[in-house]
Image: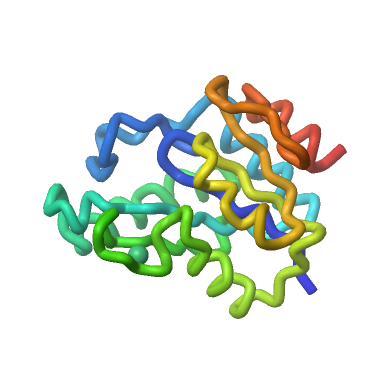
Length: 169
Ligand SMILES: [Zn+2]
């Protein structure tokens, strides 16, 4: 079985300006790439799970989303970070889909595709909903940034350096 780190994208790996899809607006958060490289070297799969309701809202098309995703992944590869898979939800809040976080559909899809050991895995995000899987499965949740509340089995860390230390030791 595989251990994985489930990553939110906007606001966690890159700065969130709201509905990020323009290449010129891509800005990685401090230390993110370096930390992800370390985490991958420690044997974790890197899986991005991202809500992209900008598609449902008509702010950008699925094609524009995919183009940005390719650009995003290429910029990470340049920094020796290889993402194993990206799952995105194109739906809006009122669509009632099972993929949009805090629904856990994308996490279970990943578990099916990658044979994931929940108990050795982590979820990282800047919002509580990014850690939704943690109340269903024994995944360790890490809230990134300053806005989090502390709960049982939740870590709240303000830097990627601290996150890499927690996961890799
Ligand atoms: Zn969805």
